[in-house]
Length: 219
Image 1 (cartoon, helix red, strand yellow):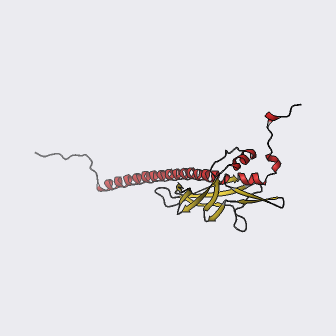
Image 2 (cartoon, rainbow, N blue to C red):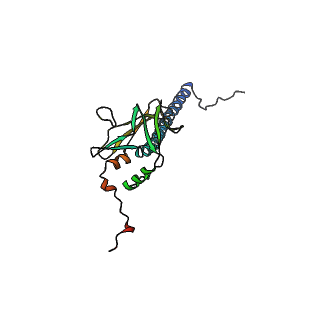
Image 3 (cartoon, rainbow, N blue to C red):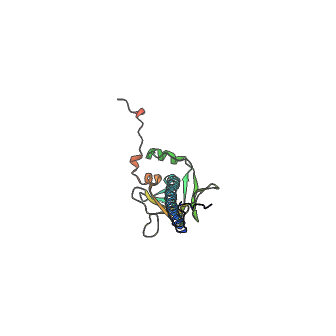
Protein backbone atom coordinates (compact mmCIF):
# COMPACT_ATOMS: atom_id res chain seq x y z
CA UNK A 1 0.00 0.00 0.00
CA UNK A 2 1.37 3.37 -1.02
CA UNK A 3 1.11 6.21 1.57
CA UNK A 4 0.27 9.66 0.34
CA UNK A 5 2.59 12.52 1.27
CA UNK A 6 1.14 15.46 3.26
CA UNK A 7 0.95 18.81 1.50
CA UNK A 8 1.08 20.83 4.74
CA UNK A 9 3.85 23.48 4.56
CA UNK A 10 6.74 23.23 7.04
CA UNK A 11 8.78 25.90 8.85
CA UNK A 12 12.17 26.55 7.44
CA UNK A 13 15.27 27.56 9.37
CA UNK A 14 15.22 30.99 7.75
CA UNK A 15 11.69 31.64 8.99
CA UNK A 16 12.71 30.66 12.51
CA UNK A 17 15.66 33.05 12.40
CA UNK A 18 13.50 35.88 11.09
CA UNK A 19 10.95 35.30 13.84
CA UNK A 20 13.69 35.26 16.46
CA UNK A 21 15.11 38.52 15.07
CA UNK A 22 11.74 40.26 15.18
CA UNK A 23 11.12 39.09 18.74
CA UNK A 24 14.55 40.33 19.79
CA UNK A 25 13.99 43.75 18.22
CA UNK A 26 10.58 44.13 19.91
CA UNK A 27 12.02 42.99 23.25
CA UNK A 28 14.94 45.40 23.06
CA UNK A 29 12.60 48.26 22.17
CA UNK A 30 10.40 47.52 25.18
CA UNK A 31 13.46 47.16 27.43
CA UNK A 32 14.92 50.53 26.37
CA UNK A 33 11.53 52.18 26.75
CA UNK A 34 11.10 50.80 30.27
CA UNK A 35 14.70 51.66 31.19
CA UNK A 36 14.15 55.24 29.98
CA UNK A 37 10.95 55.49 31.98
CA UNK A 38 12.70 54.19 35.11
CA UNK A 39 15.54 56.67 34.57
CA UNK A 40 13.14 59.61 34.24
CA UNK A 41 11.26 58.42 37.32
CA UNK A 42 14.50 58.16 39.32
CA UNK A 43 15.58 61.66 38.22
CA UNK A 44 12.20 63.14 39.17
CA UNK A 45 12.27 61.40 42.56
CA UNK A 46 15.82 62.63 43.23
CA UNK A 47 14.92 66.21 42.31
CA UNK A 48 11.93 66.10 44.67
CA UNK A 49 14.08 64.65 47.47
CA UNK A 50 16.78 67.30 47.01
CA UNK A 51 14.24 70.12 47.09
CA UNK A 52 12.54 68.70 50.18
CA UNK A 53 15.86 68.31 52.01
CA UNK A 54 17.01 71.77 50.91
CA UNK A 55 13.88 73.38 52.34
CA UNK A 56 14.37 71.47 55.60
CA UNK A 57 18.01 72.62 55.89
CA UNK A 58 17.04 76.21 55.06
CA UNK A 59 14.26 76.13 57.65
CA UNK A 60 16.80 75.30 60.36
CA UNK A 61 19.33 77.85 59.11
CA UNK A 62 16.77 80.62 58.75
CA UNK A 63 15.41 80.11 62.26
CA UNK A 64 18.87 80.16 63.85
CA UNK A 65 20.28 83.01 61.76
CA UNK A 66 17.21 85.19 62.27
CA UNK A 67 17.50 84.72 66.05
CA UNK A 68 21.30 84.97 66.22
CA UNK A 69 22.76 87.29 68.81
CA UNK A 70 23.92 90.81 68.03
CA UNK A 71 26.05 92.77 70.48
CA UNK A 72 25.59 96.53 70.35
CA UNK A 73 27.85 99.18 71.84
CA UNK A 74 27.31 102.92 71.71
CA UNK A 75 30.41 104.97 70.95
CA UNK A 76 30.34 108.68 70.11
CA UNK A 77 26.59 108.52 69.84
CA UNK A 78 26.65 105.75 67.23
CA UNK A 79 25.58 102.13 67.50
CA UNK A 80 28.44 99.71 66.80
CA UNK A 81 26.93 96.36 65.94
CA UNK A 82 28.89 93.13 66.32
CA UNK A 83 27.24 89.98 65.02
CA UNK A 84 27.97 86.51 66.36
CA UNK A 85 27.08 84.97 62.99
CA UNK A 86 30.24 84.14 61.09
CA UNK A 87 31.62 81.74 58.50
CA UNK A 88 34.28 79.35 59.81
CA UNK A 89 35.39 78.12 56.40
CA UNK A 90 33.81 76.15 53.60
CA UNK A 91 30.13 75.58 54.31
CA UNK A 92 30.57 75.83 58.08
CA UNK A 93 28.95 78.56 60.20
CA UNK A 94 28.61 79.37 63.85
CA UNK A 95 26.54 81.83 65.86
CA UNK A 96 24.98 82.43 69.25
CA UNK A 97 21.25 81.81 69.11
CA UNK A 98 18.55 82.88 71.54
CA UNK A 99 17.26 79.87 73.42
CA UNK A 100 13.81 81.44 73.30
CA UNK A 101 12.88 81.92 69.66
CA UNK A 102 10.50 84.71 68.73
CA UNK A 103 7.79 84.46 66.13
CA UNK A 104 8.31 85.33 62.49
CA UNK A 105 5.89 88.23 62.80
CA UNK A 106 7.62 89.71 65.86
CA UNK A 107 7.90 93.50 66.01
CA UNK A 108 10.74 95.65 67.33
CA UNK A 109 8.81 95.84 70.61
CA UNK A 110 8.67 92.05 70.91
CA UNK A 111 12.35 91.80 69.99
CA UNK A 112 13.37 94.30 72.68
CA UNK A 113 11.34 92.52 75.33
CA UNK A 114 12.74 89.13 74.34
CA UNK A 115 16.32 90.43 74.50
CA UNK A 116 15.96 91.54 78.12
CA UNK A 117 15.79 88.01 79.55
CA UNK A 118 17.10 85.92 76.64
CA UNK A 119 19.84 83.36 77.07
CA UNK A 120 22.04 82.31 74.18
CA UNK A 121 23.59 79.02 73.09
CA UNK A 122 26.36 78.37 70.58
CA UNK A 123 25.13 76.76 67.38
CA UNK A 124 27.36 75.34 64.64
CA UNK A 125 26.62 74.09 61.16
CA UNK A 126 29.20 71.72 59.71
CA UNK A 127 29.53 69.98 56.35
CA UNK A 128 31.35 66.63 56.45
CA UNK A 129 31.51 65.02 53.04
CA UNK A 130 27.95 65.46 51.84
CA UNK A 131 26.40 65.28 55.32
CA UNK A 132 25.28 68.53 56.94
CA UNK A 133 25.02 68.74 60.73
CA UNK A 134 23.58 71.15 63.26
CA UNK A 135 25.53 71.03 66.52
CA UNK A 136 24.30 72.67 69.72
CA UNK A 137 24.57 71.88 73.42
CA UNK A 138 26.29 68.57 72.80
CA UNK A 139 23.56 67.49 70.39
CA UNK A 140 24.55 66.58 66.85
CA UNK A 141 21.69 66.51 64.36
CA UNK A 142 22.10 65.43 60.74
CA UNK A 143 19.97 67.59 58.48
CA UNK A 144 20.82 66.08 55.09
CA UNK A 145 23.17 63.66 53.34
CA UNK A 146 23.10 65.48 50.01
CA UNK A 147 24.56 68.94 50.66
CA UNK A 148 27.26 70.09 48.28
CA UNK A 149 27.72 73.65 49.50
CA UNK A 150 26.16 76.29 51.74
CA UNK A 151 27.45 79.82 51.52
CA UNK A 152 26.55 83.44 52.03
CA UNK A 153 27.03 86.14 49.44
CA UNK A 154 30.36 87.69 50.44
CA UNK A 155 31.96 91.11 50.48
CA UNK A 156 35.17 91.87 48.62
CA UNK A 157 37.26 90.98 51.70
CA UNK A 158 35.52 87.62 52.18
CA UNK A 159 33.11 88.66 54.93
CA UNK A 160 29.38 87.97 54.97
CA UNK A 161 27.63 90.56 52.84
CA UNK A 162 24.75 92.26 54.61
CA UNK A 163 22.20 94.74 53.32
CA UNK A 164 21.52 98.07 55.01
CA UNK A 165 18.38 96.64 56.63
CA UNK A 166 20.05 93.63 58.29
CA UNK A 167 19.54 90.94 55.66
CA UNK A 168 21.95 88.23 54.45
CA UNK A 169 21.66 86.10 51.33
CA UNK A 170 22.24 82.37 51.68
CA UNK A 171 22.79 79.96 48.78
CA UNK A 172 22.34 76.22 49.39
CA UNK A 173 23.44 73.69 46.76
CA UNK A 174 22.27 70.07 46.91
CA UNK A 175 23.64 67.19 44.83
CA UNK A 176 22.83 63.50 44.40
CA UNK A 177 23.03 60.69 41.83
CA UNK A 178 19.67 59.13 40.87
CA UNK A 179 19.42 55.35 41.13
CA UNK A 180 20.47 53.61 37.95
CA UNK A 181 22.24 56.64 36.49
CA UNK A 182 25.78 58.00 36.50
CA UNK A 183 25.09 61.73 36.16
CA UNK A 184 24.61 63.82 39.29
CA UNK A 185 21.59 66.08 39.77
CA UNK A 186 22.07 69.53 41.31
CA UNK A 187 19.43 71.63 43.03
CA UNK A 188 19.97 75.19 44.30
CA UNK A 189 17.84 77.09 46.82
CA UNK A 190 18.33 80.74 47.83
CA UNK A 191 17.06 82.55 50.89
CA UNK A 192 17.15 86.12 52.17
CA UNK A 193 17.24 86.12 55.96
CA UNK A 194 16.73 89.07 58.30
CA UNK A 195 18.95 89.26 61.39
CA UNK A 196 16.28 90.54 63.76
CA UNK A 197 18.59 91.86 66.45
CA UNK A 198 20.81 93.62 63.94
CA UNK A 199 17.79 95.28 62.38
CA UNK A 200 16.44 96.32 65.75
CA UNK A 201 19.84 97.59 66.93
CA UNK A 202 20.34 99.85 63.94
CA UNK A 203 16.81 101.19 63.89
CA UNK A 204 15.92 104.63 65.16
CA UNK A 205 15.16 104.19 68.90
CA UNK A 206 11.98 106.21 68.48
CA UNK A 207 10.47 103.29 66.59
CA UNK A 208 10.79 101.18 69.74
CA UNK A 209 8.77 103.49 71.97
CA UNK A 210 5.67 101.80 73.35
CA UNK A 211 2.35 103.47 74.10
CA UNK A 212 -0.19 101.67 76.25
CA UNK A 213 -3.63 102.67 75.00
CA UNK A 214 -5.22 101.44 78.23
CA UNK A 215 -3.34 104.13 80.22
CA UNK A 216 -4.27 107.11 78.08
CA UNK A 217 -4.56 110.44 79.87
CA UNK A 218 -8.06 111.58 80.84
CA UNK A 219 -9.19 114.96 79.66
